Amino acid sequence: MKKISIAPSLLAADFSDLKNEVKNIELAGATHLHLDIMDGDFVPNISFGPMVIKAIRPYTNMIFDVHVMVSNPERYIEDIAKAGADSITIHIEATKHIDRAVNLIKSFGCKAAVAINPGTAVSSLDAIIDSLDMVLVMSVNPGFGGQKFIPKALDKIKEIREKYKDIDIEIDGGINNETAILAKSAGANILVAGSYVFSGNYKEKIESLK
Ligand SMILES: O=C(CO)[C@@H](O)[C@H](O)COP(=O)(O)O
Ligand SMILES: [Co+2]
View 1 (cartoon, rainbow, N blue to C red):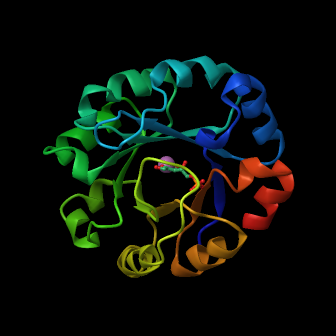
View 2 (cartoon, rainbow, N blue to C red):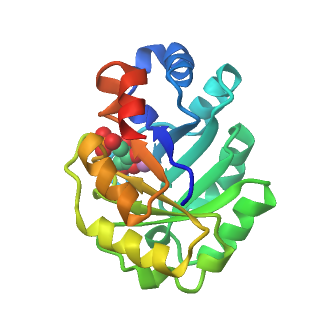
């Protein structure tokens, strides 16, 4: 079984104090930081972009796991990589050129991942999955933190894990101490959690998800 990692989502942090939020979440035991870039087009919300990622990069050694919810993400991959991303996840629904976009991510030395929305079938990944370091299965419709977990994500994770024993599988949306148990038993090994982790004692929350 793969090691379980917890990736707190910065979207739920205090944006007026990002430098300290990043330091504190690392001290609490997080190894990954999930960074949600939203463009107001692919998703109905706008968050932050590469400038914010670059600004917080010097304050932590956590793995920067950047989730790009942007139409035609290939336009921004270079900027995101140069801002300090370690892993870049783009949505299969957001580009007509998924293989070109994945190759572009790798050309900057980043790990490459593809996300699927709740309405997208696992089979849509068939042509690209062998080139990926990670698959991200959305367990909410992307765009906002604090939404309710959609259980059909679990079947998708099982389907991927049965075929691909070694790939990293990340789950994102509505993760708390109860849904985390379901996600891990389905085969997910990287758990994103925003509102759950940032709404209490960070260390206790992270421990409860592991
Ligand atoms: O990508 C997204 C939302 O689109 C997520 O990463 C959220 O930020 C997760 O937040 P919670 O559901 O854990 O509050
Ligand atoms: Co996300």
